[in-house]
Figure (cartoon, rainbow, N blue to C red):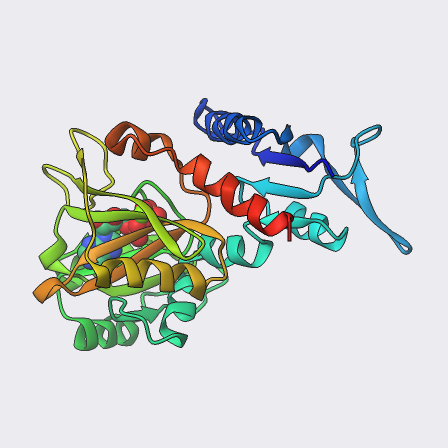
Length: 298
Ligand SMILES: Nc1ncnc2c1ncn2[C@@H]1O[C@H](COP(=O)(O)OP(=O)(O)O)[C@@H](O)[C@H]1O
Ligand SMILES: [Mg+2]
């Protein structure tokens, strides 16, 4: 039986990066004899009535056996699942990965190593007086310097390091209306982290990222990457983290704790694979396709 898949990416994001990921997957699939069609999310409109859950714009196209979802459009992913299609990664994994608060809750529920984290109370508006008690409570528990991190963000752009109570209160005030956390700063990992790419039960590629003059390893100005052979413990943590959010594959960021103990920083359900290829020569897309075929054929 012929297997036929869709690859979905976001049609609104600028730059080639997202189409690039989709095309790498398509190439890897076609090398295994699998036909895939690449779609933008805005080409497949979820359509709901009281007796039908479907899509507009897929006229004439056969419903696929599987979808590789390289985007974070959780509603579209859910719609496809409601139509009975297997989506890689599933909408739940994407939702948890996208929201750093849900991610840390899932990791903590599985007793995995994370930086100590306090979830900021929800504020609906952005004109509330600074809550000194909350800020002082965070300092009492986590100390200074401390990380503040928005629930939704990427490329290190929504992650902040604060050194004083004044800096902390200023930042908290500017984050009103957004979901964020206070987090222990792991200073043994200043400016470096590990990116491990997990597919199924295995780490298939890994690299160390270093930033020359920033605490965030993924801030790219002058940053370097280096192929890396992770320890057993690091691989075990990356796989466990991927499972904790229910993902099939993921790019897991680990921080360097003291005594070689890794600490989980983040799990990306739609991690890009080009940087990993440039650094290690390993094409993660091949592993992703093999993994999917293995499941689809059974
Ligand atoms: N608690 C922490 N302690 C030390 N460094 C951190 C901590 N959290 C994040 N970082 C650094 O900041 C970078 C970006 O944080 P991350 O949570 O991965 O957000 P993003 O989704 O923007 O990549 C990480 O790669 C790491 O180098
Ligand atoms: Mg990250």
